[in-house]
Image (cartoon, rainbow, N blue to C red; front, side, top):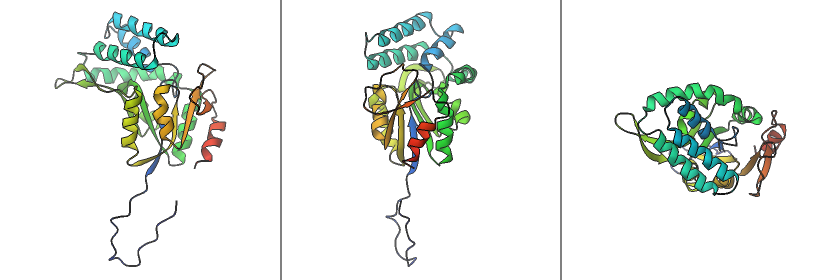
Length: 249
């Protein structure tokens, strides 16, 4: 980027000089930074503590099997699963849920894909902020902010009433492509999105909105049919990925 030279006179206006946008990388969460679906493990975690209805847990498992066998679309899966979650936590104290999420994160941390920590640390060392945009509940990803050094998290958000109990109303659902696109548009007002990481069609807005969109694979479990460059989530050293990112920094 060409540096701006100082004006020869202090009297000349500077109102048209805009600050440079901060570089960031945007990651999906489920299947991109962590194995599988965090929201499903979180539902099981709550159900085992009798804080989530058993029928909701069973239905969630049915939805997972249906999307894996292509009986339903990924979008339908997201819509039904997030609605099941929002109704399942209705009436719970938001503060209690946040406390439980800290305990949950201890077991969830071991499911981070091998490349994740190395890649994020390398990006941060180059001055690139890291934002997570996910359909999993925000409460269960927020505990990873200090551990991974995340800049910001946008996740599934359920409304809490004046009594701090969840109402069952969904305030924000970034699991949907259209919501990701809307959030990305707002992010781009003050940031330059250098890299986007995802693994499903719902992540296309992230991949398209970045200078370099990267499709994350893991043990051949997903086929890259989106046309973006693939990276191996099992690469603990993230050496191939880092070599690629260097070309854009």
